[in-house]
Length: 274
Ligand code: AMP
Ligand code: MN
Ligand code: MN
Ligand code: MN
Image 1 (cartoon, rainbow, N blue to C red):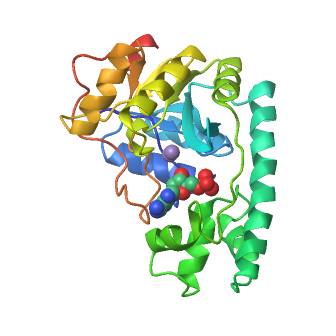
Image 2: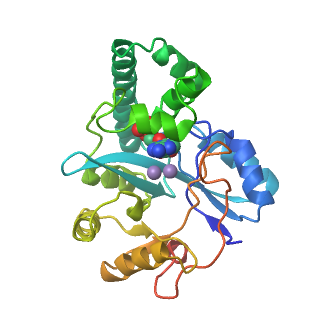
């Protein structure tokens, strides 16, 4: 097991483990340094830090910010080692929180027009006061027999062109990176190979990200084809490499916090800059 897992989610966004339960699980699985990177919010960090101190895990305060790049392409940017009290960062996250609230209402309206009632209230109840994610809508749709499972809910209702999808404009790459830098953190391009971009466009994304001030890129450890390809971008654009499971809890496709394998020797791990 790798000592580092720098990309995880808790109930502060769309994960199913509370921050303390997540930290305990990570420690049990051999993680020594864990980044908590909830979507567009830092609300879970205080609890995670308290629990981490008790069990001897190093907690890296983080965030995963939603960005829109070029023609409506959703991109995620992870901020690591952020000062969560930074007013510039928090003003940016507040803007995205308000956008999420607006989007949730719009989604509820669209589902109602489509004949499925109560989705906004259902999603809000499942979010329990945390930011409302498409995942909460998906869980409601599954619980109420509209979808077989979370994937089915996304495929049929929650992606571009489907009845519950709202095409919102998140922050720009530069805004996200500036907020993270204002908070003293490092900006990392999350899961570059999951955007399904053709190679030339992905290369341009990495270049734009670097030009906007980003310093890192996620590289999958081990010898998978995915890891090799991201490693290549890290080398070409002189970005440090970060790793993370993107664990969301039991109900997600990433079933475990913690990662097997090492980074390729060609890249510089982000923690060497710490
Ligand atoms: P949001 O940030 O509210 O737009 O929701 C995006 C989140 O939905 C991502 O962070 C993933 O956790 C989750 N997600 C996206 N696509 C899928 C999918 N096909 N199946 C399950 N979860 C998904
Ligand atoms: Mn998520
Ligand atoms: Mn992501
Ligand atoms: Mn994530």
